[in-house]
Amino acid sequence: MEPHQYFLNRQMQTALYALKRQYGGPVVIYRLLTSEVNLETGVAEVETLAIRIKRVIVLPARLTREVVRNISLISADKLIVQGGGFDVGKKVFIVDSRDARSLVLSLDDWLVYGGRKYQFEKIEEMDFGSGWIITGKVLLGETDLETGLQQTVDADDTVDLATGTVGEA
Image (cartoon, rainbow, N blue to C red):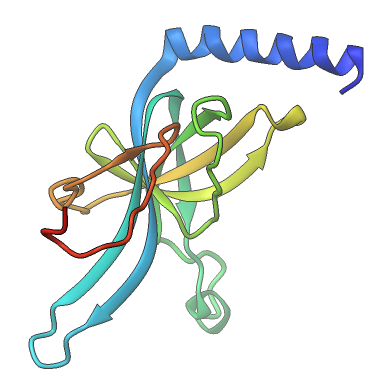
């Protein structure tokens, strides 16, 4: 790393630290590992990886109006097709890479903040590998978000696995 890059990286870390103190909050990032549906009962068995990050910058929500247009616009032969508008809440989450060194994100992941589920809409990597900017769209109607969470690993924890059977000394 060149000297000017070190200085800019240090400035970025200082700014992220100040934002975390002012707008920080805990989130849990989920990644879907497997999903199977029992054909007899119709119950889905889902296995996810949950990563808890203690302090992520959560910027205030933007409320946008989205309009869904479909084939009725083309086939209706009307000048204006009304309806189909709904409000969507979005939040911007900034994850500091020092809090989650081995974190790998994809658009299929989601996070839970404040009892609400947010689907990743856009992920941007910040300069110098200092973090990620995640734009999330709230998914209304999702329930039982953290009740299945039995064991978590913080993003900065390490885990050592040992082989053996249960009850072996």
